Length: 230
Image 1 (tube, one colour):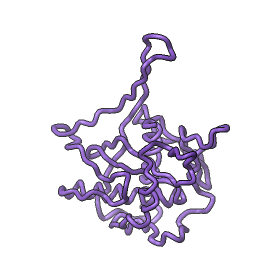
Image 2 (cartoon, one colour):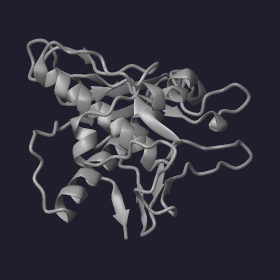
Image 3 (tube, rainbow, N blue to C red):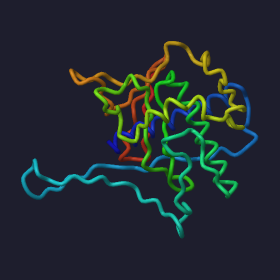
Image 4 (cartoon, rainbow, N blue to C red):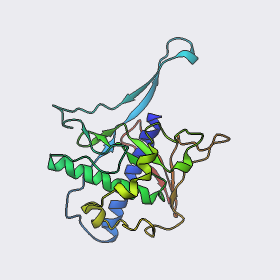
């Protein structure tokens, strides 16, 4: 399920950067602060070619995050999956990253009509890994979480109470009235495709805006970007 979470997290974070670019362009603005540039690691599944096919080992391969002596700095936890309150970072730049990722949750939550957002943001200064996707309880089935066991229901339920808007939220005019969401057309939503006879299939995220749709990028290739159909 980790690969599934990485795929969804890539797309949901990409949505945030697309929103930022569109907001600045349409309002002819320049952000008065630096916007952190972050993404999730590239990943792939590798299958051993030894032995009987059904018994072959399967491995998850992820892009290495060069921490400590590397350019990514130390490994950090920016937000966990139990609360929308970001961790306090002593380093000012790290604190800005944590606030930006908190802002990204705010946008994702409303852009998905309060259905899901990315949590458990951790990694280096630009590369992130091991995310969790928090989803509305109606997507759970027979006590099983839609994405992974890290999809903590209490963390999702408390989002509107725990999230504290910061300068990113205010500048980009994200709504603070959680009872009303008029920021995007009602025809826009993030819709998980429905699997045949097995509830919701979350393997391939599909984002359906009113003018088209965006399909998930191939997370095995970081140079790839989601293909947008308009």
